[in-house]
Image (cartoon, rainbow over all chains, first blue to last red):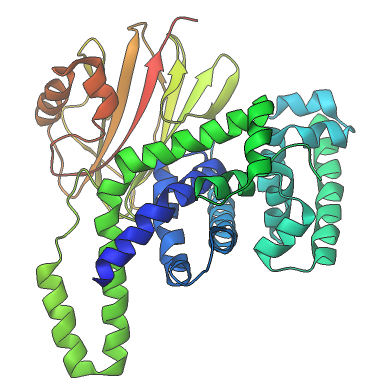
Length: 163
Length: 241
């Protein structure tokens, strides 16, 4: 009976978790692993939350942190560099860069750990500051401060890349 | 408030949370509709392909977690329970189930001057180059082979070899050299076969011929060969450019 319940939760939430992880990691196989890891960490809570909104907050928090850590660990290993040549066209124009979600995703992956989850949820996933605060269980002020820090780092990054 | 829906709101709709405003927005906004469609495709892929092979692994992991907790509570009883679970639970089958912590394959494609990580299902053309980076996860032998829509098998690593090559005992290994693709159009699937003992090229070629006999759809659908090895594979589509 307990395994049926667990399998039921996995079938119910697995698709959304997988979709989230695939969006973050861009790799189906890695997303499968991340889905299992995320589900194992949230499944104790999923059965107790009263609605989908709270379930999603758990999923977003755990999946985002897990997947961003995976991306950080990948970058520590030598690999062929992605092409970032298009940054040269937008050097100095941060607002133009922030509108391009793929480009922002690449900058987020290179940002300090503290700001990564906040920046990804806001600039790539489109969550407003209140939603980011709710998902990550931070104060709104902290979210605002981390977004400001991310923008400062992004400006430095695009300035260096265009040079 | 943003002019577009956040992914959180789109995912909440998918979980059945009522949001009439979001539904109206999706009818009017092409970008959000595209985001929602892409998320739906990923969820569909999970339902079609992923859940079947991963649900037993998740269940097994949960069982092991509970068994581990029991071990701390009542050693004698817990040991008996853990033993019973180990006998009853099926071991994950290789090669068609991917186990957490298993070996990995990363493929990088050069298209002209651009080099980027290749993802499953992407398009490539004649003259594009491939390089491989693998994570052996402790397994000492590797053979990389591909099969294309014309039924041809190519041994990419060791290039032209007659059997698996030895791998360095490193967590991540970049394989020497690069492959330049020919102009045979259609799907091509690359299989990375990791093993504790070397496989022969002959048995790998027989396994790839068996898949190729099913045509292009089989190459797109089958992610593993019927061989005793830990495997991962990646599909790309060769097109004219």
